[in-house]
Image 1 (cartoon, rainbow, N blue to C red):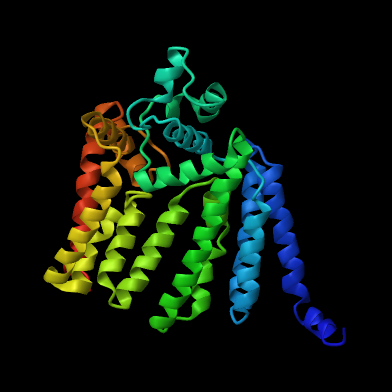
Image 2: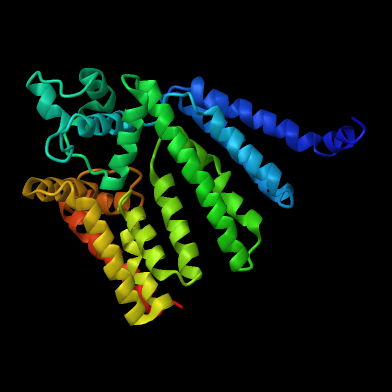
Length: 351
């Protein structure tokens, strides 16, 4: 008791602020409607201020930072995502596979419009995901689909059960990322506490753990891959990088950058292994319809959807100014080219 009281006194402020953060995360998860804009902004701002305090003032106390990172995520465990309805599509896809369907070959709208219900709670899932999501083919890569299947296997008929199962996978991935991220920073002689600017960030916790976005799993495989690459385990790094791509396609844009680290011979071998493993993940779902449907869906992100599009909004306004209408069809074709050119410039001209 005599030992614990001084320790408690020493960490009184961070403990109290940790409790305050926990309460705010609870309110964010269980007492917030997405249309309550002011409440959302106020909660997030308060959480961000507290987050900055923790990382700046507790940077020597890695155990404390790790503990609150875990606590804040566990608080969200039983909540239904309130800022995204994508999880309904995740559950749909997982249940489709468990029923023997290929989720890439038909949209939820296709079944619902015909009065067919291929999975349990089909109508409820379709209503939850919304007509926009339900009218498009799934764009989630194969390893991501396996995560959805795992949720379906353990949750049965329960939507909340599926949410909990997926959230546990994401929390596990976050702490895998923390594990290998800390090791990588140690190898690079970078202070370990820097990694908590990511792992304790309210945006990361809310968007990934809270809203069930599997970029968390993608990042886990990516960081693990980088750690293995730094330790000269190139083949294992390539396999893990392929796993990252098979969760989300985003890491594809980083492939050219490996040329700087590896040189052309080693990078070519790295690319071949990544390609083979990625092919093996996709081949189980392969069909001509799969290629058409998947490429069509990926194209939507460049030519139709306008989520947080930053520079695109500037280009769109220029289109309105000079042409009188939205030029998304043209802009959408230019954006991928700009991205590729940007990556190539970084690869070959930046040290």
